[in-house]
Image 1: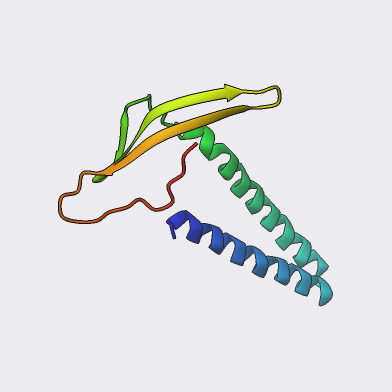
Image 2: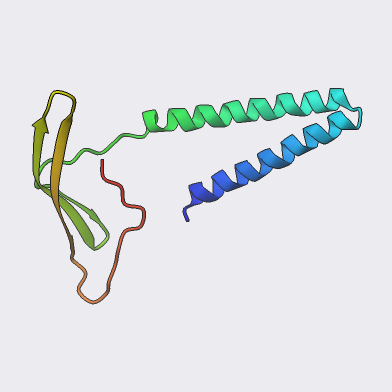
Length: 116
């Protein structure tokens, strides 16, 4: 579990508690306080969503070329071959890659690896 997973869980938990508080305040007759709390929550949620949407635009994506190794500590991944085939409805890509480790004495692995 990464730091961002924990942050998401925290935001979800705080959201649940806040919405329950808004409903509780409204049922107890404090509609003004409930509305004020809901406006603060919606403003924070809007800022959070703006950060989520904007962050991929700010962080540069790394593109590697065919044959270039991308290494994480002692293990690497290299794209050896890329072929494409096109039909009337879709284009299919077949990627042949090689994963290897340069570690001499210890077994290592990368968690949450995603290939696009």
